[in-house]
Every structure is written in structure tokens, then in C-alpha cells.
Image (tube, rainbow, N blue to C red; front, top):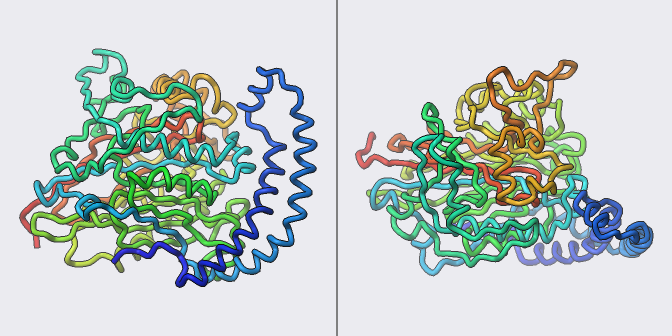
Length: 539
């Protein structure tokens, strides 16, 4: 049964909610502009110096006065809108569901299991920092609406590209190879100058062989013969991504722009995920000004979805309804016409450093909530192909300050392809958190430039955030003979114990993606899994 699109039980509630938000929006926007006009990004400051523009103080002065007056004038209307909007949050389902109607049902299912018993699935995760413009500027990122549109265009450009497999037999045989550099004309300009690419048909419908043979490029310096995880740094999003998890899509208008850009490729989208205003004490611990920021785009239909809000957030993180979104997706059928499904879960954990106890409590909740969701929605007449958990965990596997989280039992259930053990990364891993003051430096403000920088350990040290030392102790990093990796806080994990016993899973590739250079302070990550389903039942 398909999920309803609206989060409200009836049209009357949806209409009142829309009226309330229309009354609130002008006041909210003027407040946003009031703060934004006073806060510049490093890119804007550099541009003013280059253009020898000295009128910025006047812009700040008169802009502040203008927006403050407009804010005061619209405050009574916002208060009236709030009286309409806030009570309706009690009956609001915590997400919107957008579904593009396909030309045929076969266009949104994967026939690999049905025809050959094999299938390949691509996942990607990215933190986009799509806060209201004024707040995003504190992360050295501005122009939220424009960034949202450009991010959507770049994702579509990447996932719809031709995908050519390039193998490198020897790490010393040649330089770095990537299909993104040789197969497509990519944009080398900075943020906002990406050309729009037309979407292509869903690769899942081209037959199992064409989907399964989706190629990978192996970096000459990245493929380690002793490792079981092929990997690359790519200046484009991986081709044929099936499910996309995005974090920090807090701004509603930005979420709508993303939806508009992605829906020709990802026909099933969950956005505006989370709760607002006051919630029952057992659900959330404070008034929520922002949603969870989670955003899921899938090629496959969403059969079930459930959101849970973390009740233990505190500080500035408590203003947002961070939590866990669990989904059950319809993949297709196997050779015996048994339904094949997948579980996809995404989360965004507590952010402040030095508060690992809170994150560990949230990991406990994540483990429980995923188990509860699957126990309720897993049917005996279904085959489960994959169980994936991804998101921004806000801790890494190299910082002494994150020791508690690194040893959490979650990692005994879910496999992290980048992890060698608690507190130890595999030598090819790259940190995913960039230093915010340097986001527009020439070395990293284009996809190709960021790709080259991440491949060089010396350059990487300048732009990727270093580990966080334990309180009161000096940081010794890296250990002798170990590479400099930096903070990897964006994860894609998968679990094999919860999938059907007939399924065998292997990693096809792990990808660090530089396609969003200059648009976010995180490096997106991708994972492609190959799954073989035995035709003989073990029952």
C-alpha cells in the first residue's frame, strides 16, 4: 500500500496549516535577511576586496534597519499564523512523501533477482548544510536556495552519466584514473556554474546485466591488494545511485527545490522529516524550531516509513528534531515471484564535541528503533535484500575524544567498510569533514581541485578537519607509519545478519565524492553492494 503524500489526515488540516505558514513566512524571511546581511562568507569578503567595493558598511547599515522594520511590521501576522500552525503539529505525520507516477510499474522495480538472481545497489549520503541562509553563513556557506538547486543539478548530472569501468592492475602503472575526468565534460568552475544535464532512464529497467555491470574506477593509489574494499575519489556522483540520504536539509524551500531537481530520477522522496513545536515529553525534550534535516530520495517505492526523534538532545542541537528515519522499500521479485524488499535507515546524531555519552545513548536508540521497525514490518513471505544505515554520525574513528562512540556495539552488528577496528581506519580512508574557513580556497573550490587535494596527503592535511584530542591530553596523530586521514563523520553501514539467509553480499566499491565542492562543508560518500540470491531455499 502506497504512503499518502500529505502528512495531514485531511484537506482541512492541510489548508489551515498552509495558511498559518503563509502568515509566518514573511516575518521569518525578514529575520533571516536581517541576520544574513550582517554575516558574510569568506567568498563574499574576497570578492569585495577584488572588486574594491567599499559600500558594504552602508549596505549592512541600511539593510539592517530596513529588515528590522519589516520584521516588526510582520510580527503580528506571524503570531496569528503561529496560533494556527502550532496546534496542527500534533496531528502531522512527520514527513512528506512525493511520488512520481511511472509510465509502468516495472520502471520502479529491479528485475535482477527475478531474471538472474543477482543485483547491484548504489547508496550515497551527504550533509548539505541547507539551513536558513543566515544560519548557514555561520558555517561559511550562503545563498541556501541557489545552493539547493545547484546541488540537485549536480547529483542528477552524476547519477545519470555513462559509467565506464577502468581497472588499474598496478598502483605504479599510471596516474589517477577516473571516468568522471574522461567520459563527461564536467564543470571546473566554482559554485553555481554547473550546466544542467537531462535525466536518463532508470538504469534498473535496462535488464539485470546492464545494471549489474555498472563499472567502477579504481584509483591507482587507492586499490590495496590486501584490502577487500575497492575505492575511489570521484569528481562526480557515482552513476546509477539507487537511494540517496541527505542531512541538514532544514530549510523547507530548499527541500522543495531539491525535490524538483531530483524527482525525474528518484521517483520516491521523503522530505520535511521530523516534528515541530511542542511534542509529548517522552518523544522530544524541547520546542522544535527545525525539522530533522533528513531527506531520502529513492528509485524504489516506499512501502513503510517511520521517524523517531531523539529525546536527549541539548544545547543548540535541541532546537532541531534530530532522529532516525526507517524505511522499507519494494525492490522487486525473485525467481519464485516472492516479493523482495530492502531496509534503508538514516540518521543525524548529536553534534557538539566532548558529548560522546549523548551520542552513545542515541546509538542505543537507533539500534532499538531499527529492530522494532523491522520486527513490525518484516513479512514472512518477503525476501530482504539489504539493511543499510547511513548518515552524519558526528564522530569519527580516529579522534581520542570519540573513544566511547568508536567502541559502541552498533559496529558489531553493522559493517563499516572503512573501519579496521575501534579507533583505527583502513589506510586508504579519507576524512569527510572540511575546515570551514578554507571552503573557497583554489585547491578545493572545484570538484576536480578537491579530488586532487584529497588524493595528496600533504594537501589533505590543510583542508580536512584533524582529529579531536581527549580533554587535557596532547594529540599524537598519526601514529608512526600511518597515513594522515582526518575526521570521517559520514557513514554508510550495512548489516548481513538481518537480510534473508539466501542472500550473499559483497562490496563493489566505496566512493568519496567531490562533486559538491564549494557547496557544503562535507564530502559525500557512496557505497555499491552486489547481492546474490540463491535459487535454492534453505527453509
